Length: 325
Image (cartoon, rainbow, N blue to C red; front, side):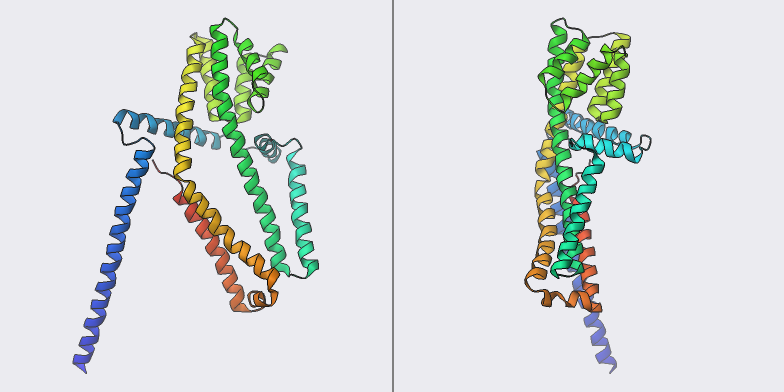
């Protein structure tokens, strides 16, 4: 009996050692793969060529990171100010309150329609959440597109201003050229500065207010640099050319980062969308098959675990798409 217990103990210890070795090999292989992938990413974004380029890229990235942190650490805005900034960033012509109330109304109508058709409360809640999350995704994409357009137009506006200053125009004349030659969203910003200057306001104060209103890091840097140059003296045309070169380098870096993280973003959207789509499809095609998730304790637990797992997976994949520096 003692010999049999000893044999069982030896087998258990051997099994544990075998599992531990297999786990260690998997961890080592994952670390090797992670190091290779990290070196590949660094080489793709230009961190592995030369030390000078490495320092320049890291400096650009850190400058953008600290500029975003500086904007988040500013004083808290009221709800009305946040909604107005959301409307301006998304490019809505109507007020943000009207848009949000319309979306909430559509979600409520979808919930009521699903209940009336007899598909159940859970499917109605799911339909409402899909509408709200879809609106959020469309709004974020619209804001990202508008911000990218703003950055591209801002680089072009700096080049226009530099040419106008070299041609002998004053700073207000350069801003007027930008407002006439470039459309939204950057054109009206400089047009508003020209209007305020025509009404007698100080141009430096107008630029400072413009930077605080738009909450764009590059625009704030531009306003600060121009105000310093106007106070101490200097060549504004060369300043604008330097800012345009820095912005082009940063945009080039951001495009590389978006390309490297595009696969992770697509996987995240696909893996999140498939369970939601199948859940709604099964509720429509076979509601009797899905009743176990609504009327039994085990089914409700499975449904809650599924929702938590999907949200946790979305959070993990979002973290995986962030490049550390």
